[in-house]
Amino acid sequence: MAEAARALAHEGPPELQHHFENLAAQKEAVSLGMWAFLVTEVLFFGGMFTAYVIYRESYRAAFEGASNLLDIRLGAFNTAVLILSSLTMALAVRAASLGDRRRIVPFLSLTMLLGTVFLGVKVVEYAQKFEHHEVPGPHFLVPHGLPPQSEMFFSLYFCMTGLHALHMIIGIGLLTWLVRRARRGDFSERYNSPVEMVGLYWHFVDIVWIFLFPLLYLLGRHTL
Amino acid sequence: MSDDSTHGHPTLSAYFGVFAALMLLTALTVWAAFQHLGIWNTPVALAIAVTKAILVALIFMHLRYSARLTAIVVVASVAWLAILILITASDYLTRSWVPIYQR
Image (cartoon, rainbow over all chains, first blue to last red):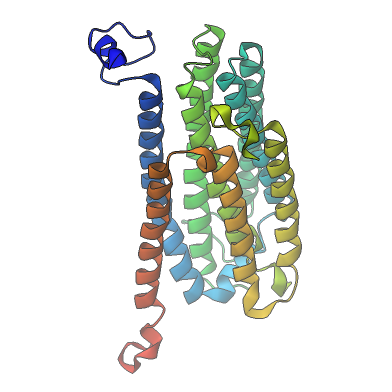
């Protein structure tokens, strides 16, 4: 009760918004709100996964053949990079929650670096696709020995990995913002929600890739 | 694993354990993709991916230590995703069963 009165009188700690009774309630609301946003993201990507399921089942041979044209080494490497970046992100969140200010910035920076490496590899992969005329559109050439529907696979490949890459770019932007705030000393044991929420976002983007990797890179390997 | 959960967070060893498990499962899914498992290639790949996603959600995203309401929201998202995919698939993937729609 005393806390409620204090909150109403705007006398709480500076990081406590006046409409919350205490920091614990605020944290729970922030976390629930972020998860609710991630649910909309699940369904956003879900539309593409649905399209993938339908077309893959309709044009199985085309999808398996086209999938085998992706570079499995670059795909696996990027998967490892992203998993490692999730670890460094988790460690940054941990440092923030323990109020270990010296470690927040290094772990956030490492996460940014790994995210950039991922995007760099993606640029190399995309460039190869352009060179080989495997990008859907007027310059697309049906790969040798494959049905014409392989173009549909590449359409989905570019849409799904492109949307995922856009999320990575936004994530790196958010990390830049966090690094600035962490340098300013904004985060402590009591207040670190921004780090934790960007962490949730980053891990979600990692989960999307965890599904994209086998569905796009591995589906036809057993036919080789 | 929840012994250090005074702040509702996993231990350091839990983080590294999950990281190691994710790397191992990635290697496993690549290996499994090259095996001739017949119709089982896709289910195996998906099972590994779901396992990895659950590990990330429970430990990295602290779902294991979160409020029950958060867990309900997450389960609901999976339920809606299942509705989206299953009902769409139940139309498209069964059309060939009906003679009039056969291509």
